[in-house]
Length: 416
Figure (cartoon, one colour):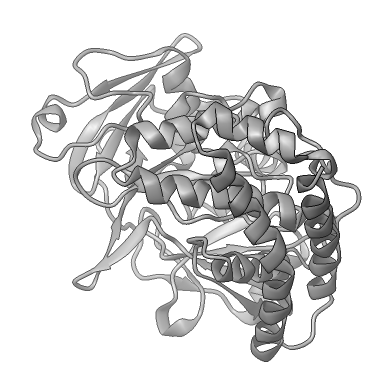
């Protein structure tokens, strides 16, 4: 295994990463610093000459890697220590979230290994029967890619409209997200919640439900990829933990991670269009509380760099009703005015949040009331649209029941 790795954007070297003892060090390439339109890896790793290290570098690169049981399974299958970020990046970094490829010295960026690889229905069925699918396909040596997060998912292309595996190092256009025994109907949950969020005016990743290997799977178009004259181009992005310099171990506010106020301040400071992005972020917070998504943490929101200049808030993703699963923690990942129990968020907490972020109280309370009044109706309308597209499904009531309760409770507490 190489003791240094090179970062690339398309065919241009961005910089080098190496291990110094247990610490990671990074330096930007001189040509990259001189390049017109060069972007920083992260707001926490600014464009500058000389070596950079410390927590910001360690956290940025660790946040590119899978988490939880996916990471554990990958490490075991590849014979690596589960906490060895450098070794995992060396093995998986040929296609990461965003624009960067991380490759050993001497290896050039670009697709390796020919056209996309189609899997037979029988192969998909076997893979889905013994998750994690991502770890199983990386293990066979044909995929070198890294996806952050703890859910089992897989990057794919859609030649002829059917999911296929990209050649090693090639960009993917979509993600497949799978369910599991512990979280029944999770793909349908995400598809329905995305439909509902879009109807409520939030920008969301394009998502639909498909059947693969006899199971329901969510198919999500990647917002960090763009078709350009017949070529799939990577767009730079970073999640809010990366931008704020937080470890993935601290993605929840209750564990010392970013709260809504931190994310609001970041957008206010760096967004190319702060006002619409701040309105979207506020809508996301209110939507999560009402729909029962307790997993709206800082790694589930990102900045996207669609061109030279300042970033925008990326479309939202990982929107699910976690309240549909009783065994999950009901506390919100981000508190509202210091209150993380959704059933106890009262008018005073919303007013406290408005004061902390510098928004007018009347405006913020109006936004909360408006969405709490509208969302149950939108949920019925989108349930009907879901049924037209995919048929009857138990997830529709699994989401709507807690949503109706939460909306009523929210409106009652606004009057206290």
